[in-house]
Image 1 (cartoon, rainbow, N blue to C red):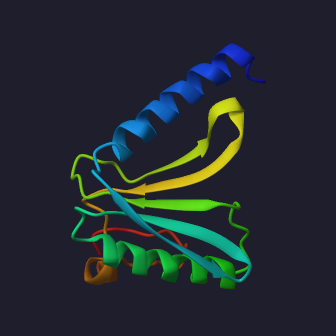
Image 2 (image 1 turned 60 degrees about the horizontal axis):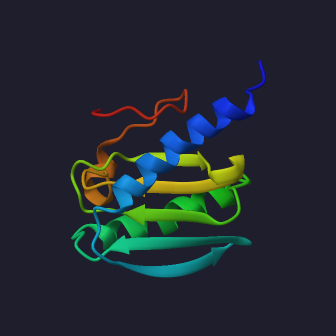
Length: 131
């Protein structure tokens, strides 16, 4: 069933309201741009997020793994590393005007680094936590 314009606008308003609410918890961001396998992406790091460096490193590793597997990633991928523990790890895929976006928020409780090693990948390819 196709969505009508009013429903699309309602969904975008909720999505973008949530996105702006989460990113507004950061007082300032630093950002870095990167390219891998033709994929351009940007990482915005909350200056107050002590885990931002680990999240950025995990993002680089993730983009490399995804591109090396031959998977297409949406253009203009943006990763936001947020220090607020209330920020959910979440992907946003539609912006104003129903345009496709690829914004990912990694909140204060994002699993990276050594903690990630606790995941197990069974033969089904599904990630499970804890082992």
